[in-house]
Image (cartoon, rainbow, N blue to C red; front, side):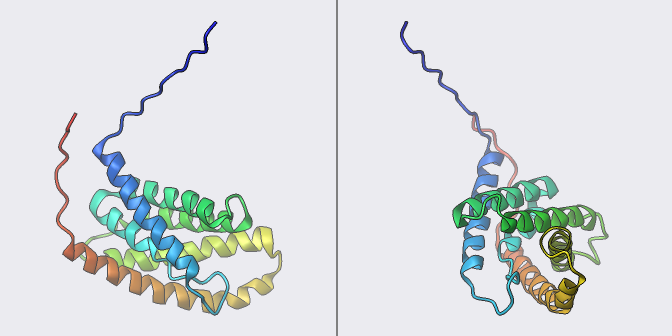
Length: 182
């Protein structure tokens, strides 16, 4: 009896392509982030969060969650730390950030936007990571001695990334309506 091969065809949408392109940009920025030497372990600029903020502002929370999730998983595979403690630290930070952003986008837009979202997400990210580190990796309250440094880094990088996202949102063309090419 001859071997029968089954051909599986995936049908993608323009939205799938957009998510893939934006996730690729976020993954590339994560790789750059990993190459930047920082004085304190665990402190990174979070450049990929710029993409997440732009996606959140333009396409909504679900698209931002896809981009962020794909970034965490693919970035960890490319950097060689998938399923390591570093992966779970990144995942916990991303999940806390996404949950915070889900609430933040509901705040009045005249007072809250990409800069405030970025700051809130940065604080949520570091909070999630510190909580996981305390519960799993460093079961000692001495870990919280680093809290002022992490908090300052979250504030500084949150502001910078938010300002970059605002600038890019001003320069990028407006969201185009979906056109079905099928």
